[in-house]
Image 1 (cartoon, one colour):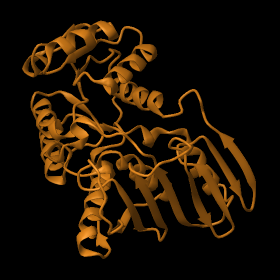
Image 2: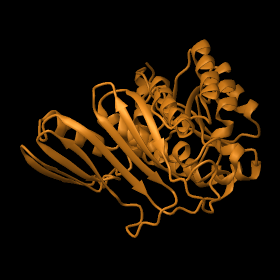
Image 3: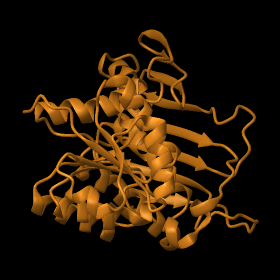
Length: 331
């Protein structure tokens, strides 16, 4: 346990790094923040925006800097394995923006380096911390709908995909791997169990798209506790409600209906209840970043840990495998 605020160096100075750093500034006055980007001018601009300690000219300088405790990786995920593994070898703790890697081999490289160096490593998966998850799980625990049987999550929007997200090599997968991991995390959290097997379906229809591998998928997931889950995820299909969709949990004695992002939750069954969005931390970023800093200071484990992230990445890869086999694939 330590009373010192950790020094955090953002590696990759894009929009998501800026959002994280500005929120950290609000949460922790005096938190030492550093910046590195392969474009040094970008790192300097970032330092100015976030009132950082310094812009670091090279990754090696970040690894050698004894005032840097945590490397916060916010680059495209094609570079995560290399940066995280090297950071671990230099004794730095690591936070990785989602998705963690392109594939399981890259994730295994990180896991081995982390275990060998005995450093902390977690993924910045804000959906793990969204208040909607706690509220829905409480409704289930308090028997509002009886025994849950089916979970149905829907998320679609016609998103404009540009830059590295349209690059097959850098992506290593499609919409499910890059954006869909949020919804995989939500599905697993609401199930209260580990996934057992999955089948993925997509239309056998040719159409123009710039998104590698796939832009839309339907998943059916079997969980170890007997619950069945469905996820529909698309970057392609227009949505007049700008990304809002309805999702449901069907129980033996009722149904929980919720806006997929968490704008509202309604339970109808043995008992009735409604919730509306927690506007103070709607996306869960505040709770997520606080957990990283507070638990680092207190010497407590970080969440979600690499075991949870590995399980979810295995689900994604089993889904891709099932597209070729046309059958359920074990996870």
